[in-house]
Length: 385
Image (cartoon, rainbow, N blue to C red; front, top):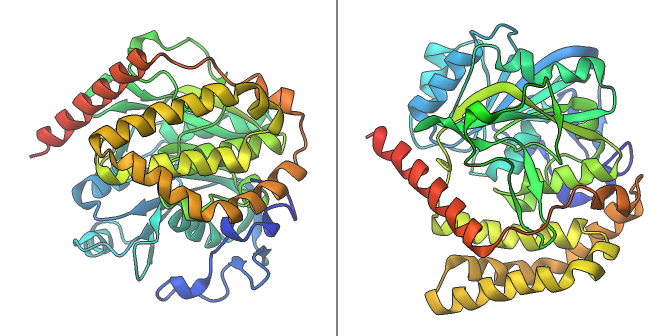
């Protein structure tokens, strides 16, 4: 949860797309990660209307095949790339048998979502167009791609678009309508827990940024800002990217009608030790990299209080989130170096960013949301058994 032209090129952590990580990937891909840590454009096409969906898969099994089947039946059919993070199931064999037109990039090890997605983007043979991030455990509606990409046609300042994710276990409840960031540094899924029937009757609505589970980006902008920050591995890389796109002056909108059902937290498990550890670590890294100093000075009490309370709870319960916070500390030096580049190349004022930050939710509200998402996620897992 980055920037234009040369800006992303300075951040080595953002673009480690070395072709050596890809088993059998062509060396002459249109976009390559060079020794200078830059996106290198090579004789690609320049088709603004071309849409490529990049799915990062890890043991997706039947849910992945279901997602692919929905994509090939879209009213606006996209190109599809599946980056496989060394799955141990038969995902690759099943894709080859059922969806031979899908481009598959098999990796030798699990490189995480952020790096996997960047590698997929590096194989798009185009200078521009639209790239869609979609979780393998989603089921997009028939017109999902058409609606998700529509704002790019008539809103030139829009660099990213958020879709509407609902819970597979209860499709009438919203799982995400983009990202909302609070003044205590907590980033959450917008409108989580709200009824689908409460959606506003608008084609699009401004939002801080999209959730990486169902997001569309201008390909040129995604490359210019440096893509996802790969050390994050999984979780909040979309929040970090949303901050950097805002710094670069790009707008983001949410499209209520671009709907997809989602098996919430299928990758690591809702409430799992891995998820809690990575979110805690990546929250600190996101704030270190992206929070303007003026906002830090004003809101540091709320930010530090949030982490102090969480750490106290972690000590008392041995919550894995505590170890995530501790794991963030040894690698603060490179995050601070990246901060210098991100903040130094900002094209908008901190006030323009500040207007998006919301008052913190109460601890009670956060507990209610955690319980809601946990129940719906567990129900989805139970329904598949």
